[in-house]
Amino acid sequence: MNGRRFLSIGECMVELSQAGDGLLRKGFAGDTFNTAWYARACLGPDWSVDYFTALGDDAMSDEMAAFIAGAGIGTNLIRRIKGKTPGLYMINLKNGERSFSYWRDSSAARSLAADPDHLREAVESAEVIYFSGITLAILPQEDAATLLSEIRRAKAVGKLVVFDPNIRPRLWSSYDVMHTTISEGARSSVLVMPSFDDEAAHFGDDSIEATIHRYRALGALDVVVKNGADGVNLNFGGEESFVPAEKVEKVVDTTSAGDSFNGAFLARYLETQDAPAAARFAAKVAARVVSEHGALVAKEKLGLRGR
Ligand code: ADP
Image (cartoon, rainbow, N blue to C red):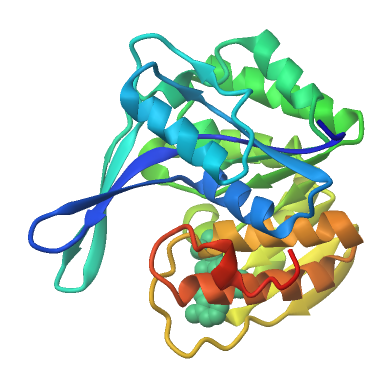
């Protein structure tokens, strides 16, 4: 194996979507997995991308692991837990409106940080560590603390730790726990990549500047605030810039817009250290993603040329 590893930590779920005539189509998706997918599609061959989660020992866990590996993403760090199964969600369509039902309360991924030695080895093996507010939300509180302490160690030794708050109030036991834990996630990270609508709704930020200021005041060095069709605002070590979104003819499905932006941004940023250029590239990739159905758009459709 080569030396440069991007490690994404979180939960991938079985996805069931409507396929017409009452039939359901099976897929696999989840925020941190989606980002790993796009990072893999955009990074060169000198990088390995690994997914860190826990799966069960059933057929669906095997199928998911095979799917992840099939995308060129490493599965060697995935722990298997006897008697467990992956989480599941279903996309419902009613009069053109999408809604989601989840069955994830007892998923294997909830135990992803239950083996601290295994977690430490994985984090130590990587140069870049990516996680989200959803990763923290699904963990028992003591395991979230274990994960955050490993994340802080990684930051302390100079690794690039990246956090997307991805705020989902339904996953948290209370607003208080959510605010405290997400703030701790950001404090433990180098780069925070929030979406402004979530931050305004759940932290009460009245401007993008307020979001940037809050995360930098907590201790994040760099912040990228995504704001849908209105583009992204960056603050890297105090230096500010704005990158507009790409024009999209017809928005088909915004699922995983933010996840794909993060994966593409990080891939380009790791190779160039040029944050505004990485954001321009990521805006192009995300524009393709919102123009297609589904969370995971195939590499061939991303217009990456030569990768
Ligand atoms: P999230 O999916 O996390 O809420 P956003 O909605 O901010 O994130 O979208 C992430 C990125 O996807 C944006 O920064 C932009 O580049 C792209 N994007 C999202 N919606 C559109 C749109 N309607 N037109 C063009 N680009 C879009």
